[in-house]
Image (cartoon, rainbow, N blue to C red; front, top):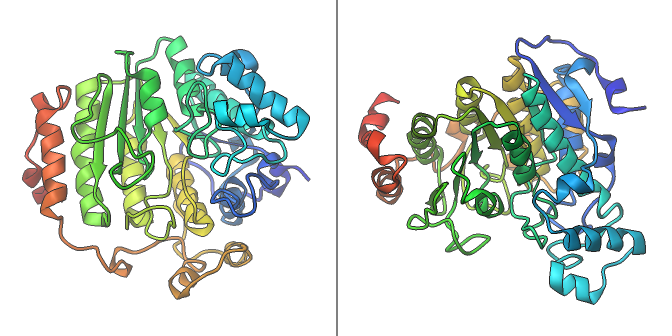
Length: 400
């Protein structure tokens, strides 16, 4: 049975969007104790299908990236070492040290090269669908840390950079917005000297979070906007940060297309994040991007709690296609989530019954801390792209 055989559409879309996936994502990857050794794309797709919220016409099977495409960004020697490791079934010590392949962070696993190449080709394919006039969602993508010559931070190939390069080759002006909990450092470095690409990242301050350098409030290289935030960000604080920045980015840069990296590790349950954001506020941000972008490509990214991730990406897909999904999960969807090999506490167990995490359920959906307000205002006042159009943060708060 292939992926599309499972589709049993129950509600029809009102917007034209495409989900790019592949059966390969059902195979094990990484290693058993790795944070990414969890069902992600496959579980999200199954949850979407349990709602009857996808049709065969909305699904596209991804393809692997070609070597020519990969070397738009990655060094040939790195790609050769990566392919050589899969052929040999292991990574040599020399390649491990030089390319950061086959270590604990970026471990060897079956289909070592083919799986990341498929995710990367799918993101490039998504860019091509955008060029053809559609909105595309490539949830296996969003691996934003990879460097031209090395794997970094669980990321072997930098598919966001390559998808953006495909859009740039068509002459489009690109805004890359990264809402993953971690700084999108690899993508920023790729386009720091390209005046037709702007990268913007809202993330955990690298003083306490990976990659532990760059992305600071005073680290705003040309072609980049960074908003690092302290631990414990709640819904009110994230809402302020996102809405304050988003409109300035659109007004100041005026892109032809937006690439949204929609990593879910900002969510309250995620084990590798120190943010406490609900999926309701995540969707609020995503909805503005969907509604206001001239053209849009959405990629996946981080997310290390499979149940929170699947629910969140299901909501993103619903908004991309204009569907309204019931808050109560269908019985088949609840059964899927309960069957995941994941230890659930009492709070998690409730999330197998409904799609939403409600604001009232979060213990710290409190007021905006002065530190957060000050960081947002400082960025808006000081960044050369944002400052001419600055609006006082307190005025924004008064409108919410």
